[in-house]
Length: 371
Image 1 (spheres, rainbow, N blue to C red):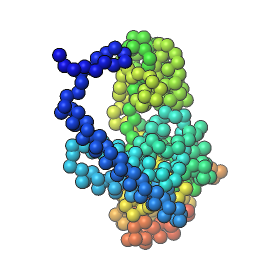
Image 2: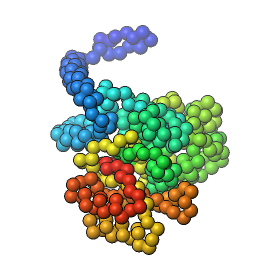
Image 3: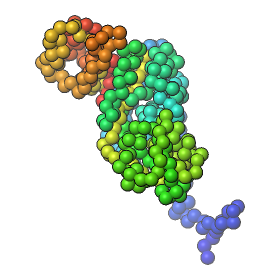
Image 4: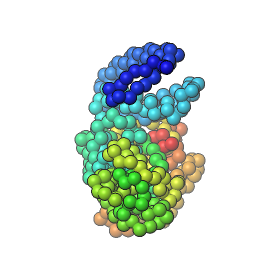
């Protein structure tokens, strides 16, 4: 009979074979090397932090992080998958940021919303995440210095633009430092063992609307109850029998709530664009996208003139949206996304002409387009 090891709970497990023992010893040795290298990297990050302390640059430098990561992907010969490599270094970057300087991040709360998980995807788990009651509170926290960064949604492919966030750019002088495009995937979370036991489903109104087809097919008799957020819905379902919630799959780990079904969304292409905002512009050397805010003189052809200017410069206009100016009836501000880095030296003439042509013109940020 094989040698066994008795465990405290009465179970017996076969002793590991010599080849397995050898592999584990080798893994332990590699782990020790990794730890030493990570600490060397951490020491260098602390030195970088000391240098940064003497400058007025931004805390978050997404272009630099993207360049490092893309280079590592090119160097990677496997078998480590690219997805795993990116996830590992994502948290290494987060650790470096926190070592250099504690970073607080404002987002639309409570913890567990899509905004929260988008922030974690963008910035890692180690930031000091601070939930806000509304978008204005998040903008004010960044503008006032209470938070170093903020993560906000700008638009969804199904629901369109988040108008309130665009309006707040007119009130607060903050800048877009990075963006991410997140696929919105809805899961059904419940402590019940099967769908047959579910009589009520909680979620945010948008999530309920985005899962109508699935709900009609699988839970046609369940009551649908709107909540302030998907996170609040999951917390409510966790405490009530015969209930379920629609929300992010990571809420399962956060709340200990099992997942009964994945991918409830009617449209698998449902995506939301999130941006990181900060009190200062970020490095723009590697940027390939620019967001601007401008107003125009009230005369015929004003907007056509801007479009003509961009056309002649070979700049693609990715987005153009108008928002009404408060206290000025029938007057509008325009938000535009341009597929270029408007701060490139060769575009200085275009930038100057835009400033001269517009009644007011503000550069919201030059940054890397989201992946």
